[in-house]
Amino acid sequence: MPPSSRTSHRTARLVVLVSGGGTNLQALIDATTASKDSPTAPDHDAEIVAVGADRDDIEGLARAERAGIPTFVVRTSDHDDRADWDVALADAVAAHDPDLVVLAGFMKLAGPAFLGLFGGRTINTHPSLLPSFPGMNAPRDALDHGVKITGATLIVVDAGVDTGPIIAQVAVPVLDDDDVETLHERIKTEERAMLVDWVGRLAHEIVDHRTTTSGEAS
Ligand code: GAR
Image (cartoon, rainbow, N blue to C red; front, side, top):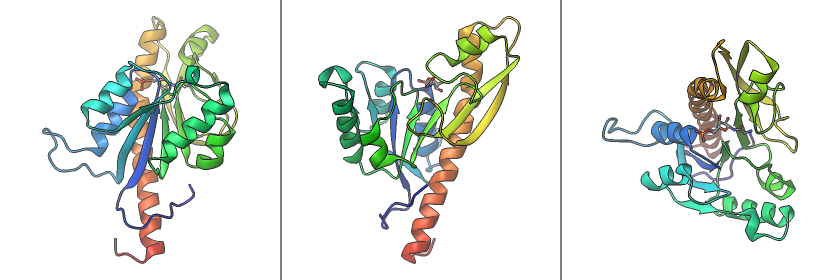
């Protein structure tokens, strides 16, 4: 991950992008914010500075709002074409000056403008063992193919469809009586743990690098 030029913060700034229910986002919120059950800030070097979406009225945005995290929406329908939308999304994310962008159930492809600003520091969690079953319907595709083991993969986002370098993977068994929903829920349980773990590691690396290069004591 390229380091941020910022030197004054002890946490890595995250922007999380969502398109749906946002349970992965919730896991990150829980890991990065103090709550009444966990009154001291968790041992996590990340701070979610904004949550963005490509659509309104989704539980992912509501989760952010309940946590007091700023939100923004960049709809494709408000733009002439995908290229314009891509520029608008890049601008909206850039306004929050993130160190790391996390796609957590974000169902759009990052375009060249977005990758020009955030390539190499955008990660995506996906519900299959890539390179098997890229795309929007990974649990269904895994069931249709009849695999006995699937899982989740965390990648660095590139211009392809779920083709970027693999950061981490977790395996999940497919049970004989699984349907798409039961399989996806079992995957998501493991996926959330993997995401929280690796966002923590990457955030730690970012803060560590910043501290070292700025000469601050850690
Ligand atoms: C997650 O399983 C995520 O991997 C998947 O959407 C789900 C979102 O769940 N993303 C993709 O399929 C992207 N190709 P959530 O909204 O409950 O976090």
